[in-house]
Image 1: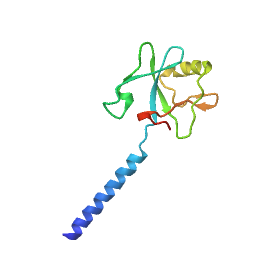
Image 2: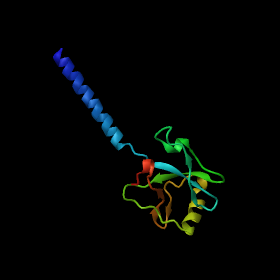
Image 3: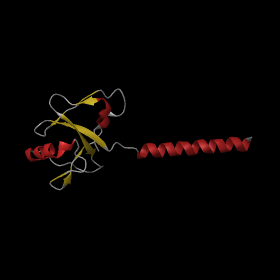
Image 4: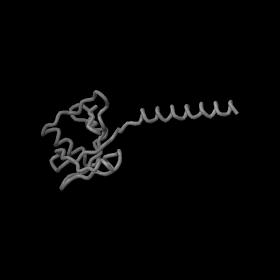
Length: 119
């Protein structure tokens, strides 16, 4: 009986460890931005209280398009905002995504601001 309880306890610890590792490795890698017809980023309207994934409960205001974009890796700096960047973003987003796109040799990405954190 004692061995059975010990085996069960070790099994639970193993499962807990696996869950912690999976949670630590899970990170949002994509998000979206709202681009107007000129390529300018307009803020999304979100209700983040509903769950942990803001893109599920966000919408783009007015005449803007919801465009999928990569979240910047830790230490990665997105391209600087400029009129040339906005024109390029508008043109590159015609497929609904900026994932994998570059501007002036830099990967286009969005800073991770989920829950007020910036990476």
